[in-house]
Image (cartoon, rainbow, N blue to C red; front, top):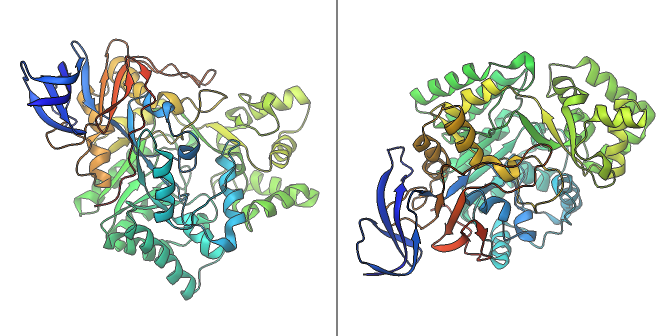
Length: 530
């Protein structure tokens, strides 16, 4: 038989968790046809993988590139890490659905993490959005979730109340339409308005619709600090009462007072699985997170959307109320200012204050001689809330505890971005870092375990039946890397740097990275729940 591509002499890690084997891989029409000794078999392209590891393409379980993939379809920040598939629509925030009556709220909300992108949706439904992505010809595969926050925004805007019966029915309809269009599940972002305005009962009712299609619900839980235990309980309760699979997003314990709690929450997940609840979690390999700077503000400040938020920040009396609330209500909500301190909140992107990027609020205050609250409010106002922050919250011991746990999957919590600016280093380094730090340096994972957490486990969780493994009949999403050279080069000081050691990346049998350089070939697909 003649193949399109043969990968010869590699140390093949199948993704199943078992030990690597020496083998050749024959690829035809984008599919793995044979694994083993291929002898004198012929191919149009032969890749010599002698001394290199050959693995399934990495699957990013937690990504936010819903809009960014349309602007940067070459997806080099993902491809150069070995990522061939991303799960988007996380934290309750998806590109669809879009309602004409709330489109301005939608655009201003998405703009908070757009890093300067112009948000102009030309679609209303997930089905229409998928067609737009297909026309963009992405270089990687896309797995879409439907965001609960986006659904709620489409029906109710930013109103902090329970839905009426008619509004809940309309939300169920939108979720059902999205699942029919191929969504793999629904995501929740329960610290971010408008999702944070929802009760557990509302979430359960919508999750029951997802369960009908055997989808999953991913949870940015209602609190990752003082409320961590109860927030995990809520996610598990939804899994039990709705009969739906649960993925707890970017699992962590935020703030020094809460470090160590992940041991208890992981035991809670284990116990839930013993009674039949399919719950797992994902994690990124860093002690700092990243989100909207506006997330430092109390939930009530967000009611009505971004425009109302900015009006409140411009009012001196309301500023005083916000400061008073933040200073007094330390443990009742995700109080990032008290959890991280002004030194731990670093501006990642600012529309107007470029000199602020890479600096903490404390550093900016010292340079300008201003009060930190005044600085925070002024940056948000001048940026129209289009500011993101890196926030230092976690302990390395907790990161290790979650990463090495059998229930954890790897996700970057990033989005596609060009190699510029001051994003979180996870945008460029997540997957090589898992191998470099947690396999090679710390030895808390076997290499085969690490690969499984980046391939087979996420594929199984979202129910991708033909990806995540190197096996006959599976799609040829493949990475070839040099174990001695693989290294994440992205740092907090210089984050926009590609890793080393990733030599080849194949997406659907097409070579997207060759000898460590992107080829420009865009063979990704928008995948649909089967």
